[in-house]
Length: 289
Image (cartoon, rainbow, N blue to C red; front, side, top):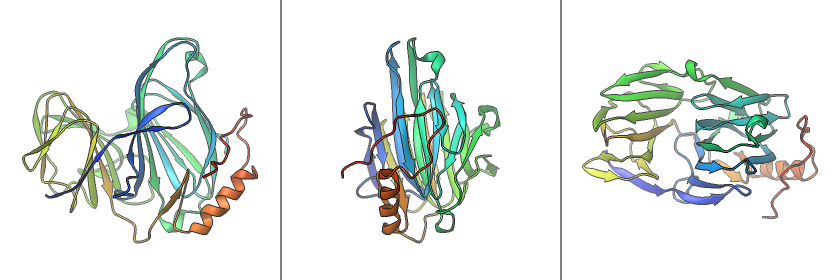
């Protein structure tokens, strides 16, 4: 299976917190419906240091938060208050519009703590772009986990290998975590459909006799490879799915098939027409550009 692109993780600032950005990329805006992927951490924060992502808006997408270490408290303007811990999934459908904050939980704010995870956006099909906002939390024990070809597989979202994650997605996709203790060859066969990319977090992967190190995303040209060789102690994420027929436009935290819809979202946030989040008094202002 030919490699179409290799994307390096790039440093980005999300308001005082540095992340590694993988998607979007100038030569590859999306992989299947996945339009955004940030790698957060790993980082150790002191007693006076906390993660505080102030209230900010979204439209036209669903956010997926997945932690490897630490904890995060989610609050939104539809009334959701949910702490997420490693292995669980927070899935928020923005649809026609939602605002949320993400902060270090109160019980951790005055002690040393670690934090590590992924923040992902999934674009919505055109018919669901203006759906009502909603929120789902899926505890870690409900996420499918199994052993295959000597590797440990977890289906975070979507469908793959004859299994289905309980995360309520809107289009055919897959997001999988693959771990190896020793060097193994994972046979994917026809288990993954649509576009496919591998994000290598730890260790390395070998495809077509070419080896790729950590902090890179390898985008396949025509879907999933027949097999992938994982090094020992590898941690890799497979993601992708069916691409949409329409182009997606992205500006700040907004995604839409229509540029005029982005302009409306800008105007609504600048005028603070989004409902407030209970208990929050601050917010991220609309960027100047």
